[in-house]
Every structure is written in C-alpha cells, then in structure tokens.
Image (cartoon, rainbow, N blue to C red; front, side, top):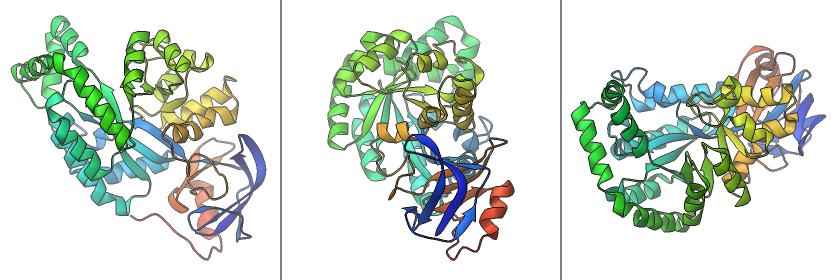
Length: 389
C-alpha cells in the first residue's frame, strides 16, 4: 500500500503533531503519495505486547474443549489486530505441569505458528515461560528455541504457589489438576518430581543463560518478590523484570537498569487481581517501563488512555509504555515509532470516541472498521493491500 495520511494527529518524536504521514512498500516514507484525509483521527505507533496469554482461550475455550491450534491462531490474530496490537509475544508455558503447559505442547504450538505465519495479519511471536525446575529438558528447550527462532524466555518458579495450594486448599488443587488433564495424585507426583530437582536448578539456569546470550535471546524472570530475587536473576543475565510483586523488587530493578513490565489490566482494574503491588504505584514512582496485556488484549490501549486521561502521564509517555518502550526492551529498532524507514505498523484511533478503527501492520490493513474503514477503502489508492486471510 502506498498512501499519505493528511489532517491527522500523529505521535512522532515523542509528541503529538498535526502533520502528514506517508507509507510506501511497508515502511514509513517521505514520498508525495495519494492523500487520504484522516482528519479527526490519531495515528499512533502499533502496540507491542511483550506478554499475553489470552491466546489460551482460543485454544481451549473450556478446559476439556480444545480446538485446532492453527484455527485458534487465526482467532488470536484477528483479536490482536482489532485491539491495535501489531507485534505480540504469546506467553506459552514450558512447565512440569504437563498438558497444554508442557514442553511437548509448546513445541506443537510453535510448529503451528510457523505454519500459520504466512497468513498472519500481525507479527505473532512466542515468549517461552520456562519453569526453573525443568532441568531434564535442557537439550529439548535449546533445540526448540533454535528450530522455531524463539527470541524471548522468562524464568518462572510456580512450585511455591503449588506447595501453598496443597497445604491450604485441596479442592483448588484438584481443580488445578483437572485443568491440566490430571488426577490430583498424578499432579502431585509431577510436583514431587520437580521438587527433587532443587539442587540442580542453579547450574541449569547458569547453563541456559550462557546459551541464551550466545543465541541473542532476551530473557528475564517472573514475579520477583524481593530485592535478592531480582539481583539473583540479574546476575544470571535475566535482566527483564516481569511483574515484580513488591516495590522493593521493582526499585532494585530500576537501580540495576533492568526494565520492569507490569500488566495493563492492573491499571484498568485499579489493582492486581492477585493482591500484589499496584501497577499505578510503579508508574507514579517511574518504576514501570512497559505495560503488557497479561490476560486481556483490550487492556493495552485502555491502560494507556486511562493514564493520559487521569493526568498521570502525557499522551506520548503513556503510549510509549505499549509501543516505543517494549520495542527498545526487545532490541527491535524497526518498530515502536513512526520514524522514516521504520515498519508501517500503526493504529488509527478516533479522536472523539478513542476507539481503534484501523490497524496496519507492515503497511497492510490488518483491521478496519467505522469511518476509518470507509476512508481507507474508498480512497483512490493504487496499491491497496489487505493482510492475508
């Protein structure tokens, strides 16, 4: 698609500017191209999501009702585009839990995504959520990362949570076991096997970290609960601090120049659904570098807009939390802003309703609705391009 948007308000160079924006051959251009009047709209960098697991609901809308992964990915793709997300890292578990969180399912998921990509509207990627107590899977994990070109791993340790549930609520434990397709006894056996690996975990993480560095993989840790925990992972090289549960951990990350990721739903809902530190408190303390969808894709734009409308942040700073900053964290220099030569990944938002009415990824229309769709499809554009179905 080759065109020039005119009369819109563009987020560029960290400020809102009333200017034109040209797109040519999938990138931001300077060319004098066919004009499309987008008066009344914001044109913003496409949203970049560093952690989202809402895709799981497309794969298994109910625990015992799974769907074909490739069909599910199409639904995820459509949902991402409709919510302005142009690049998304889907957070898939690599866990001792088994079932849809097992290494085997992660490999199956990665294979399905590779096959689907040629038809994708958005840039769909994988973040592997690697449980620390899976030491026996080292070779399998490295092979998976290499084969499917996965560039993002987060260390998780859900054993303490599992042990707490066992001690506190056997009914909840039974429900958890059923969710991953096991009886309580079978699930307990998996936990005991993971616990037995405790003495091997540190060396396992050191080996993985060294391999990740060689493979240029970004990696970090999930749910850091203390300063010591953040320091431990940072010294391994796991610099990304995803969902710290305490102010102490977030402060330590900041002191070490480690990026902090928090959930956008936490902002929209006014707090953590699990009772941990509030994301808004970290934003106010300048301790949050990026917001992620977590379990709800619409929350990304909603959170940025709420931070702006409530006066917590300027519009550019709020939107940077879901575009420019995530791109920087992942070292992706070609996305995250609307500078000349960058990928034409953008969101078209109605200035009055603040609804996303169009999304473009690589210069192709991934989603269009309302008046924005009318203007795009009625324009005399010589190279109209719509993302593949």
